[in-house]
Image (cartoon, rainbow, N blue to C red):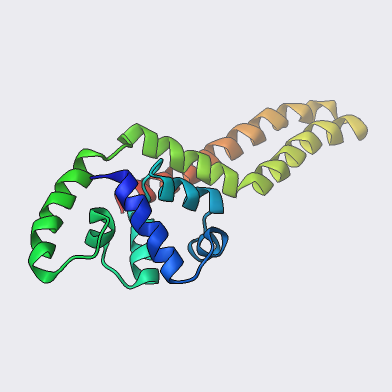
Amino acid sequence: MDQVKIGKFIASLRKQAELTQEELGEKLGVTNKTISRWENGNYMPDIEMLQLLAKEFHVNINEILAGERMSDADFRKKADENIIAVSKSSAFSFEEKKSYFKKKWRKEHIALFVLLGVIFSMSILLPILFGRIEFIGLAPLVGLIEYGYQNNKMMIYVEHNLYD
């Protein structure tokens, strides 16, 4: 699979559609820099992006992976070659995918972490302010329970994305 050829093909399809890199990026939900990297052959679009590109430009994924439009006779031959090439170039291990989904979950739930930090801080400060020092021991317990609950939610999210 020739990344440079694929990139040039994506660039030509984009230009035929009279789109800028920024406009195509907006349609696909990526930056114009990502489009540029694909077109220069520095990176390959992932399978989801290949599907969106194929739909946007009214071509099939095999044509994108071949870097050219194909006749029906060439289609079957190139399809087999592309499947083999893509499976060999799968860049992410299971652990890398797991780490990615954990980071994504944390990023999507940053407001929750801020709120939990406030609740934890208040569970320490309120007993001091109201003179009930004996309740300070509840703060670590509240934090531990909430951490366990959120970690469990995160792992459910990660497993759902890894195995579906």
